[in-house]
Length: 119
Image (cartoon, rainbow, N blue to C red; front, side, top):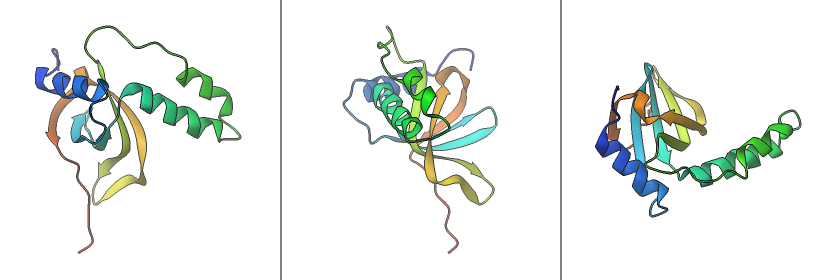
């Protein structure tokens, strides 16, 4: 999108305000479909930092995700947790991951997340 969708920015602003971290969303960005729950950026950064800290190989990167100050103005990114990239009949990873998506790069979106079933 050349200009981010104002409604999507409003959703992200509400999530960032800390009023909700239960918003499920599915977006199309760069040809990928990502589905999951949104989190405030500070919560997302903390969780990524925790995962990296627990890694023997990636622990040194944990500090990059801590100690940042909130940005001024409306959010420019969506921060997904418990998210999956949908491909064919599967979601990758099955357990959910942490994704950061530029709102300006979202070409389509819908409220709710999608999952697959073999039934």
